[in-house]
Image 1: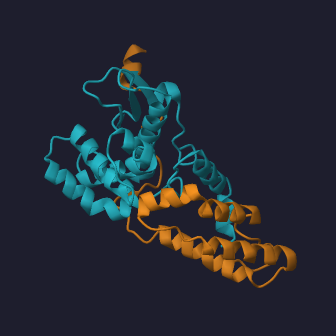
Image 2: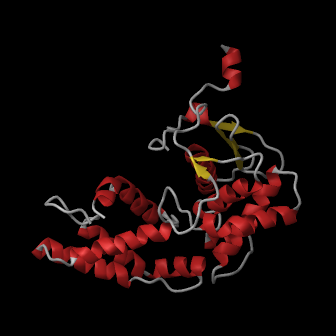
Image 3: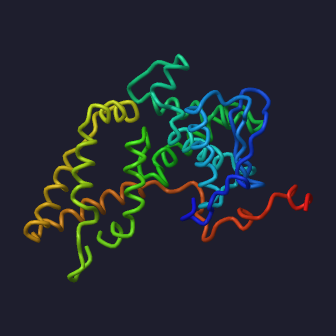
Length: 174
Length: 105
């Protein structure tokens, strides 16, 4: 985030609030703030996942002209990326939700959760949300910035960070 | 591949070894199958590790294949057109105080 010009300050960019329903968090582009729903976040692992998810949105807001409120395809793209890269759709989390599947199930989960996230913040039909996700999925599922890979666990995250630290050497020698 | 005496492999050889080992691990097989529905392809990491070591030991011309391999990796990440336009600079209001903070002050 800092490298992209959006250094994160805990007091300014995070807010802990009570939320309606079972929403865990959100990113408010109009105030550049991540909201964490203190009444719905269950434990540290859940917190880690929610923070990562919302930081993906914040990162997209920082690096791109995302039309959050006027283009549902842009919203869909960021939700696909957040579901993909945050651990929302890990095998373990899906099993806890009683969604059983192995071969390529991650992609099914990412699609479904992106649609749910869109419906939670936009007053549109499921069909419109689904169409938007379908249109952007190929591009956005394969956009792994800033990690360069899907960070399944701490090892992958560590390797992603190592690559980030090595980026100057990398791009000057290819 | 940059000409001149300053060239070195894009990653330290240890990084190629670590990526190859991770790729071949059972855990990665499971993650990759869960995401892509097929087994991971690790052979290129092994070839890159060999090229890197060749260069370290003998400054061999094998290094050329390393550049090609890495450029192919970069190309693979850029093959899909982005949905949105990238910014030239971060949002102007990222660091500004919240509206209610201004009112409080």
